Amino acid sequence: MSDLTPDHFPAGPHAGDGGYLLAPDAVLTPEGLRHHYAAVVSGSAFRAVGPAERLEREHPHLTPVRMPGHVLMPGFVDAHHHLTQSFGAALAFGEPSEIFRRVWVPLEGALDEEAVYVAAKLAALESLRGGFTTVAEAGTRAPVDVELVAAAARDTGLRCVLGLVCNDTDGDTGAALAGAEKHLARYGAEELIHPSLAVSVPEAATARTLHHTARLAAEARTVVQIHVNEHLAGVERSLVEHGLRPLEHLHHVGALGPQLLAAHATLVTPREVTLLADSGAAVSYNPVASAWKGNAVAPATTLAERGIRFGLGTDGTRGDAFRLADAAEFAQRLAYGLATGDSSCGAGWTWLDRASRGGADAVGLGALTGRIAAGAAADFLLVDVSGPETALSHDLPWELVRRGNRDQISAVFTAGRLRLWRGWPTGWDGPALVRRAAELAREVVGRAPVTRVHPTSAGARAACS
Image (cartoon, rainbow, N blue to C red):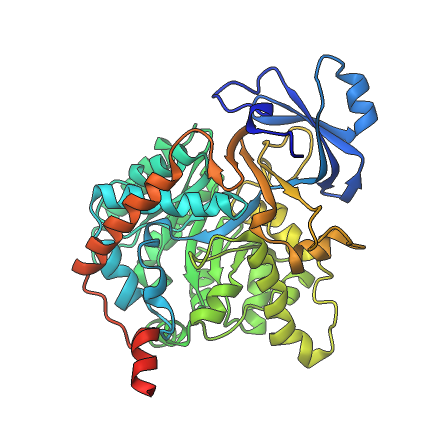
């Protein structure tokens, strides 16, 4: 691989139209790992995937790009993100649940147009560096046009399911629904930006809006992203206000169905699991968020057994897909596997599958991305598995879950185009963005009325000395 450079791959808007043939050591297909496979990319999609010898014979006009020591695998899908919260980072560390009231709402409210664009672009860059080629953006609370978020994702080459917040309990229901329709029409024909609707939590929207956003999303074949059953306080508020738990309330108002992407769903009763299964709704399982500021871990292995659709989400915690897959398995093992003697906990492959193909399905893009297959969008990673972490592997999917890391990602592609090489953009100045983001973050955090419950790590240490 020492002689392979970004020049071997297309980077321009239509550079892949003539096609190129990738010949790694192995390809991670929907059917499993296949050695001596290759893939042909034409334009923005895979034209063919199969045994390397056959593809080279069938496409003699294409010079194979040989990649010894590498596996070609689908890009990861982050099923739950908040792109405009990247300036906050450690502000939420060590804090109790429901930090959105004390940290995220004040922080996003302090963002101006430049800050929104830079914060979202910084998060998009981190996502790509971590192996995510698609993110579901749950909707910003910043008082700006969401086109700024779309532009940030578009300019980095990140595929984005872009949520528009439709909360209306403190506003005009008619305006919220009109805005939802406009948003769906605005981004209905883009390559990388896919519109969706969002409600922060069920109690933030009226029954009418919950019902109609569900209908609009179903008609547009997209999703409504809603935080549900995440924290005890949220469950209790729903019980007090409606006499029903959040998922029960969504079912009651006609908002529970295949169009729902339920973020978190950590505190679910057997009845609510059945509601999810019967309705066809999808879940974003966010294990790092559970560990950092949650009340529970979603029962993901139970969801899988019940046939409930789910993907993996970061909730903006860290843009590292391999660590997310590891956390997904690790959290299930600690929360459920140890108590039941389940030493497999998904057998490794489950977490790679849910982080790619399952995630794409959960965010409404199952027909488009999340897999290495003919006709699918060419959103993929080239991962170096020749290092000490994975070179001796007897079971590469398990190794990628347990020992893979983003430093092994040589290249990231979306829509057939090279976006990152060795962790940095090929067509724009990534380090310059990071420098500007650091400047703006200091300004924004300085004026945002953020309230922390606990001191910083330095403050806590000083208090103990």
